[in-house]
Image 1 (cartoon, helix red, strand yellow):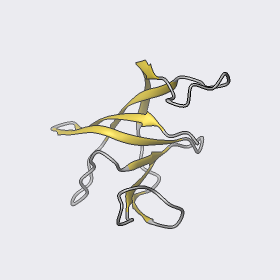
Image 2 (spheres, rainbow, N blue to C red):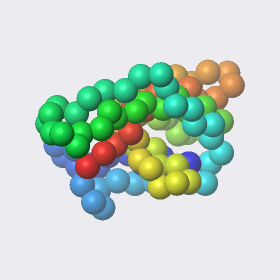
Image 3 (spheres, rainbow, N blue to C red):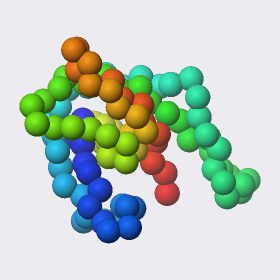
Amino acid sequence: MQMDIAGSAYGGYTSGHSSVLMEGWPASVFGENRSSASTTNLPTDQAVPYWNVLLPAIDNVILGPGDLITDDLNRTAVITGSELTDLGWRISAKLATT
């Protein structure tokens, strides 16, 4: 699992404007029982899935909404919610699509 944080002035993501917070970190990634539809309303649009992610915490790293997660299959998701618990991070994320 890799965690990135956005670095552009307008708050969006562009190539080369993120910095790695954690890399090669163990995580459990679970599909969540919800998805969202694309707003383009094209015939080939697919539902965008959400993930639940559990991972150990690391000192001095805070994860929050808008940060990116990339898994070992090179899929990227945007964190929509994060909670630091005694057992580590509990994260909800939405798969990023183009």
